[in-house]
Image (cartoon, rainbow, N blue to C red; front, side):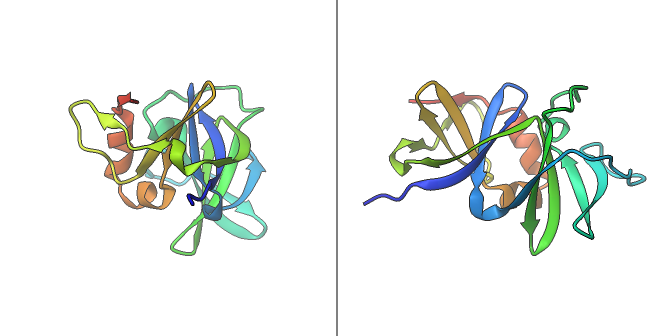
Length: 155
């Protein structure tokens, strides 16, 4: 019997992404950030969450989209990478759902190699969820570049 994958679904631009709920510590409202001098553009700054100073990455910028002003719905998804906290700014955190394993496909990429951070794509009703291995994505600095140019063809 196949097991369902429990994920947190979030939106960045028009795309919906999913990450394993086991990687998620909490989901927070966006708070004012302290800038980190000379950091990459996608590093928004630092934030103090429950007395832990946490670097924050803006996934919109990291995935090649423009920053947008409507921050009311924005959320910070707090995760741990090698036991260190990292915050991810997303446009909205929308659901916690179970994805049936049989709905997950590895996409065929047009003219590119599949990034290791891409676990698969799941088509649920009218939704197409891009399932990320967030640990791999954040450890592989190239991961963002590969995902920016991603063209997915689902069978």
